[in-house]
Length: 333
Image 1 (cartoon, one colour):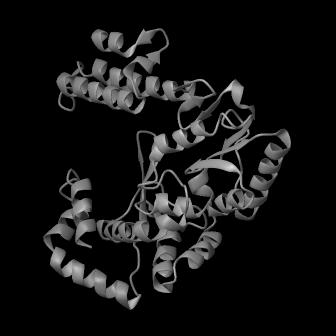
Image 2 (tube, one colour):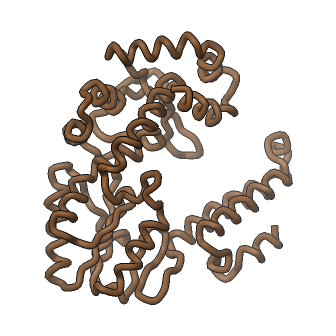
Image 3 (cartoon, helix red, strand yellow):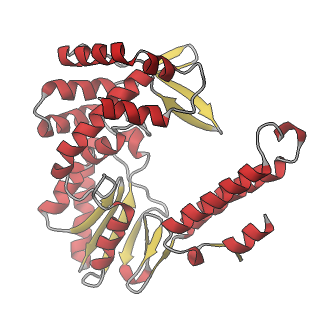
């Protein structure tokens, strides 16, 4: 609990003076004992989740007390469940994006065909009943499962409007990556049962096959495994069925036998984000932005974003925005 408390305090250190994190920190001793007592007695209840809009996006926020409990649960359950979930690369200590790409790349040479897809609105599509049934198989403590169920079957509030969520889980929650791994365990088990070469990063699915017949079988089994959950696969550019030699996108990279490069969609997102930051820099000179942003701070933010993206992309030389390299763009800024 102390570890979760320290992490939460660090995450919310820049919250406003009216945020409930400060009350939790000031009265931590009494809150800690109260929370532990309620959890042990099985009477802990989660508060409604606040829904709000930020930068034209719908966001959700838990109370500090609820976020603390979820963080503590994620710390304990990650150590307990991770070994049972197999190779789900988005989980901690499972290799991450590079681990997933490395696994796929190492198996390309012995295969000829690939089936790559992902699930449409994955987090929002997760069936609560199916998820709890899966957790019952993995966690022997019914009290822990009930606590997870209470967090999943949440009530949202927007202004003065309240409603119960019948489907889906929150993005950004401490438990979301773990629950997201559990919710596709049906697919993992099906792939292992039929001895397919596969990889999964959250809901990004890749299956490699040596023959067309094997590939068709993989696609059929995928649909059969996902149907009880009500998942729908993307049928646009996010799905690729064909020869590995043509190349396919996975986790922001384009893979083929002889190379790994950044995918066009990944570069497009990078360009869009960088353009938005540059627009902020341009507006910084106007009177309405003088008190909010400074040119130096925005330049530092742009530089940090580019460097982080460059590190993620392995090398800055790979990052090209149309006909303009990042270095040239920074010089213009």
